Length: 369
Ligand code: ADP
Image (tube, rainbow, N blue to C red; front, side, top):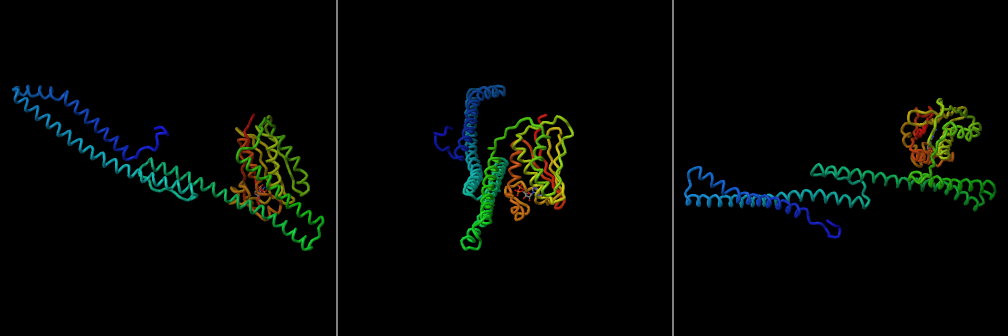
């Protein structure tokens, strides 16, 4: 039916119409067959039985026709009643399930994402209800993430703003002098807000797939060397040993955007440095396996408890929020890194034997060799 022909007819009418059409077709076939095949067959049997007189034949034929018509009439009446009963009952049950689903969809569109459909009359409707519930579950998840994101964002912005407010009030009250110390405080908080804005812009671009990734054939050892060289000063300053273990196999090629993967390695190294005490060790190892080039950044520092491991890649998730924030982290570094790696068709995962036992981050990129 074309969309311009208006609303389709009711389910009951359609079911009834189709059943009556089937019954009529059946009756018509029976009448035609009985009219063409019946009389000659009947006559032949009467002759064979020795009842050849025209009078007997005419009576018998009349009786045969009347009985046939009566049987057909009663049959048709029963079929029509059956069709009406079946159509009404079936369509009522179907309509009830579909109306329930429609009402549930309307409530979900009004924001009631916890609603689930439990009743279904047939296997097909049960499948539809299952898909519906899965969709509702996903929407609930997206909504929860959106709410959490807004709450986290408000919290992240409020912290530096509160510090700035205190600083400005202290300046007004004369509690602190306008001078280098006050400018330093204001400067660092402004810096924090703009870093947060930059990180957020990056993480949304990365997660929505709007990130420019220019993949090319790269030497993974070179990528690791560049990252280690850039991080070296910070490690020396803190007194943490930084070691690079190049790939044992020659000729390994990664399909990567060197700048973006450099950014990921820099993030992993700065996290490792932040979470490893002086005297600790951090290692960057490169190797290849059947289908991937693997970079492994491991440290023997703080480690991560099992319950935090799956969450550290979420935006704003920090294991020790106060301490990590004090160190200047915005909590989105790993979210950006994972999104960048996924944009390459790769994987970024973390492992740790627990608090105090160090952490290992594994970055897998498609092998181009
Ligand atoms: P941040 O900017 O706060 O470092 P990230 O997204 O980079 O945010 O990291 C999220 C959290 O994961 C960190 O706050 C920290 O608690 C934990 N983490 C990351 N790397 C390490 C590591 N090498 N050792 C221990 N904890 C880590």
